[in-house]
Image 1 (cartoon, rainbow, N blue to C red):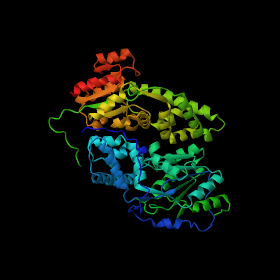
Image 2: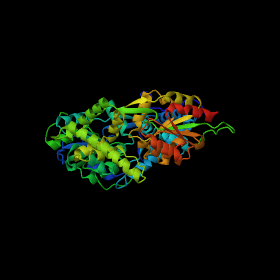
Image 3: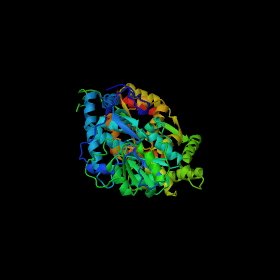
Image 4: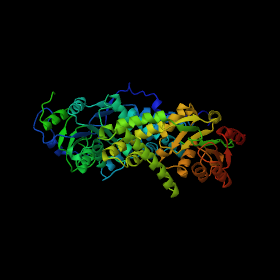
Length: 575
C-alpha cells in the first residue's frame, strides 16, 4: 500500500458528459390526482387571469427553469469517479461494485425526499450525509470516510454527471419580461448541491438574472418548509403575499406556497406534477403545461398585451507497520498573514451583493460592519463553546446570516443567509496570505514515497479554501484527504473528527504521528484517539510556556522548532 496519494480538487477534474446521449427521466409510480385537470389553464388562450400582479416572482429550478433527462451512462461515470478517488488511497473497488452502491443510494434518496415532503419542517441533508448515509453507506469505514472528505464536490459532480439540464420553453422570454417590468426574480429550490445549480445557470447565461438564489443544501432546510420561501422574499424585501411562486410539484411546491402564504402558486407541468408520492389536499391557483404560459399570465395580471462489499485487502502477516501522518493546516503547513488587498476585493464583492437592498445606507459601510460583526461573534462563540466543552462548528449560515447580520435589516440578513456558503469560501481564500513552512514539501514527499498516508485535519471556516491553498502551494498531490471542521460539523479536540482521519488513513494510532501547533485542539484531539506520537511545532499561535506545559502534562510527546524536524523522528520509527 505504498505510492503517492493525492488530495483531488474536483472542480479541476475533466468532465465527459457532452457526448452522452439522453434518455427520459423516469417518473414516480404514484396515485393519479384526476382533479388537477379542472384547474389547468390553456396556455394558448387569453382568458382573464384571477391573479394579482406580483411584486416579485420566485421560481423552482428543476421542472420550471430546467427539465432534466438522465444520461444513459451517467451513473457509470460517477462510479468511475469514486473508483479513481479510492485508487488514491490504494483501495481498488470494481466500478460495477460502486455502481451498485450508487444505484441503492439514489433509490434510497428518492424515498427520503418523498418522506421529507410530508414533514412540517423538513431539514436538508448535509453533503457528508448524502455520501455516508446514502451513496456509500455499505462501504468500509476508511473508504467511506475518504469519499466523505470530498463530499461537497462529489455531490456537485453527482448532479452534473447523472442528468442533463435543458432550459424549458418560455423561460428566456419570461425572464426578459420580468426584467422589462422591473419585477425581481428569485430561485427557491431543493438541491443537494446549490453550487451545481449556480454553475448550470451560469452555463446557460442566466447567472445574473436572479436577485437571490435559495438552495436547501446551503440553508439547511427544504421545501415544503415555508421558510425556504420566506428567506427569498425577505432577501428581495417584499411581502410573501405579493409574490408569485412557480413550481412543478404538489407535495413540495404547492404545500410550501400555501404554508408560506404566497400571493399565488403556479405549477408548470413536468415529470412529477400529476403523480405526487401521496395525496395532497392543497391545490395550485393555475397549472400550465409549460412555462411558456407565464408571459401571458403576467400580462393578464397587469392588463398589458404581450408580444408573444468488496473488502479492502488485508496487510500481509509480518509486514512492517505502515506509518500515518495527521496534521493541522494553519500554523503547521503554512504561516499566514493578513492580505489587505484580497480582503478589500472581498469587501467590494460583498458590497455589490447587498447594494440592491441597502436602501439609503452606504453599502460599503454596511459590508465592513457585517464582516467585523461576523468575525467578532465567531471568536466569542468559539471561546464560549470551548469553555462548556461544545465542539460544534459554526455553519456558514450562522456566520453570515446570524453573526454578520446581527445589526442588519431583514432583507440583508436573508440575502446573507442565502449566499452564506459561497461567501464563506470566498472569505476563506481572501482573509490571509499563506507561506509554506520550512521542510513541509520534503516531509510530505518522503511520506508519499514510502506509502505513509497524510491526512490534514483542520478547524476552518472553509475546507474548500484549505484545499485551494494546498494546490496553490503545489503539495496537494501528497495529501490523501482533508477533513475540515466546517464540512464534518465538529472541531478539534472532538475525537470524532480525528478518528475520521485515522479511518481514512487506515491507520493504527500506535504508528500514527499527529503534527499540530495547539495543545488544546491538536494535542487533546490526538490524545483522545490514542495517537502515540503527538508533536507540537513552534512558530504557530501557541506561546512557549503553553507548549512546555503540554509536554509536561503529556498532552504532547515532542516539541519541535520546525515541521522539517519531524522527518528524522518518522525515519527512525520506520527503521
